[in-house]
Length: 113
Image 1 (tube, rainbow, N blue to C red):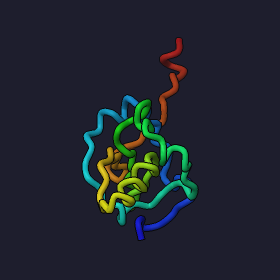
Image 2 (cartoon, rainbow, N blue to C red):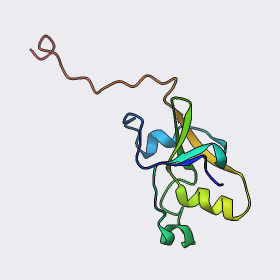
Image 3 (cartoon, helix red, strand yellow):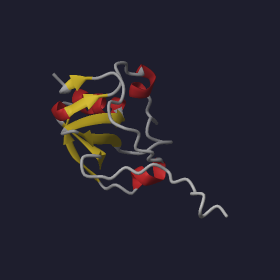
């Protein structure tokens, strides 16, 4: 078994992180067998493309939520690692268990005057 579980969708709240915010997180190693995927299907073209990381982040994106590690982006990287018989992957991990998510603030009536 490669992954802990195959998921379908993101069970965690929207974190609102863009590419720049993800890039601020230092990558670390994550075990493949601890990951829950958020996609049931793999794009074979992305898996086999020689330049699959040319336009994107070199590291997978993982979200920690309620003690689980969800592979949000980089399924092709994780499968490649497994095909190369590696059991770890370098990923940027966003820890929502300890982060405080705040909704975008809207100006109140008092400050709008």
